[in-house]
Image 1 (tube, helix red, strand yellow):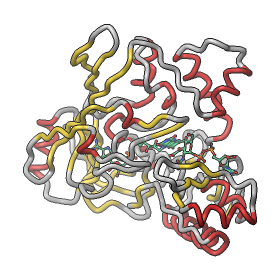
Image 2: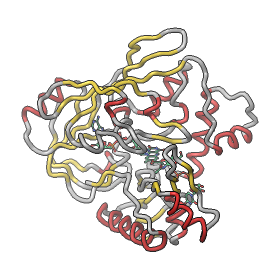
Image 3: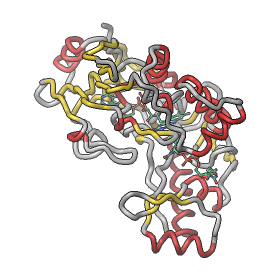
Image 4: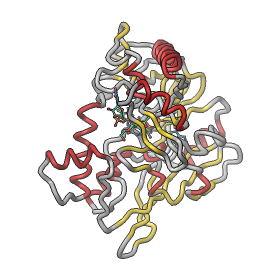
Amino acid sequence: MEIKKNISLKSYNTFGIDVVAYAFVEVSSIDELKDVLLDNNQPILILGGGSNLLFTKDFEGIAIKNNLKGITVVSENEDEVYLKVGAGEVWHEFVLFCIENNYAGIENLSLIPGNVGASPMQNIGAYGVEVKDVITAVEAFDLKDYSIKTFSNQMCDFGYRSSIFKTSEKGNYFITSVTFKLSKQTRINTSYGAISGELESMNISNPTIKDVSTAVINIRLSKLPDPKKIGNSGSFFKNPIVSKIQKNKIIQNYPDAPNYLQPDGTFKMAAGWLIEKCGWKGKRIDNYGVHDLQALVLVNYGGAKGSDIFKLSEQVIESVKTQFEIVLEREVNIL
Ligand code: FAD
Ligand code: EPU
């Protein structure tokens, strides 16, 4: 385990921002993590796949790249399987492993970049499924007293793009593994309209979980930029949740505004639509801008500074606030 000094983080974040970490180390076990923490009392940054981060400056501390691997069957019966998965496993590779073994439940979350360990952080979600639907436990290393703690699903307090690891316990834990409950009986979820449309155009009427995964991948590739080609962190903002009164006010002026009723009677509005209506979609400023196919995604065309992209996000927030009286919240973690 080698601690490197003054390392560029450009290849460790999907935005491709070129900042330097004063120290950098990769850990493959909890013992290695402990050794690093005992020998260093500088600020730490836990790095997964770097796909939900925007660096606005150099990191004056030690970046710890999580390489804790392994997939273990904890228990199983005819209907379901419990898998304990190392936090450093690549999320999409884990999805493919499940599809290969016919374990249903996360096929709708195909092709989301990043690691398994970050999946509970913001309760990743896509195409009608959130990872909270299949998580039974999160094991984490307590960065204050160096003990291992186990969080049940309920203790994680999952919400839309949220969990205690992103709110009240932010910065307090290093997630080491996640346990998932998956189904051995195929339970297809095509509630998200675009999936059934895509399956139809693939001429599939009785889809397997692999078919659903392929449909999701096709849809994602058609609108989200590939970080290997254009730097980005997926949705830069969360979709805002508004009251019925606020939603109706917008609908009065814009009857086509997408909105989704939530179980508590509030409405989720589409941030991408709001940003597009403010004229930002496809706007390019020097080497960064707003993606031309999905206005919720800010992009680095190469060589942009994180601080410039952050400033752009402030301008976007300001114009959505002026036009719609809605304050967008960032989904991406700003450093
Ligand atoms: P990182 O970016 O490395 O880290 C994110 C945060 O979690 C940081 O604060 C980091 O310090 C912390 N962290 C990471 N690992 C740990 C750990 N083991 N313990 C404690 N803290 C940790 N997200 C969705 O929800 N749905 C989508 O559909 C989606 N699509 C995307 C598409 C693209 C093209 C891109 C680039 C991103 C997309 N995202 C999406 C966002 C991103 O993929 C997810 O948030 C993902 O879970 C981030 O994982 P990561 O390993 O890259 O985390
Ligand atoms: N829309 C526009 N203009 C745009 C973008 C979207 O009008 O530029 C409209 C679409 O036409 C649609 C609605 O907004 O009516 C919603 O768009 P889409 O289905 O593309 O989803 P989204 O709300 O923009 C969310 C997640 C994505 C996730 C998809 C699919 C958030 C913040 N984003 O995007 O997650 O993949 O749904 O489920 O919730 C991420 O979190 O990084 C991410 C990519």
